[in-house]
Length: 194
Image (tube, rainbow, N blue to C red):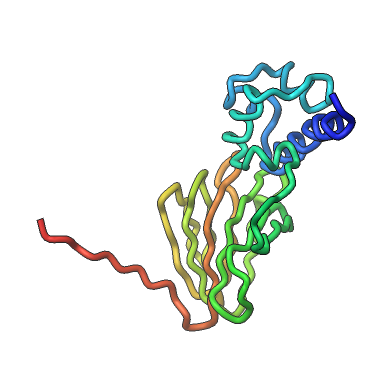
């Protein structure tokens, strides 16, 4: 095996551990979700076990990343700029839009381990629309305290004091659209004749 391949293989463990901890998953939880033994995962993360395709495929699927991200594959052939995730206050924010000053879209992954369970409401100019992709979201909006599950959405004026985080001990993933004051998400459903 050449030096470049050895270097690539050695970097898989730290990448895997970083993605797992970023998502707030324990080794035990990842082992249960993927069917890979706890000892195999531990050895893989520490570099004592060589990664194989049979191990990387279920890990990439469970961590919801492209397998190229696990192995550190170089980006090829795509001239577009790729927006990078930012982690702040227990939330990983992946921007989905680039234009400043217009409607902004984000995918948020909120880790229960780092996000404070005590709501500290804030308010600011704007209007927000939230859609829960996975997990359970706690939304405190003024005097309302709500728990939302996958497929549920909420929209609100961000001048109303608000806070959101995990409703339980598991990560939650949401889509967030944030617009200027008065700019709202418009949902339309068209009925089709039978």
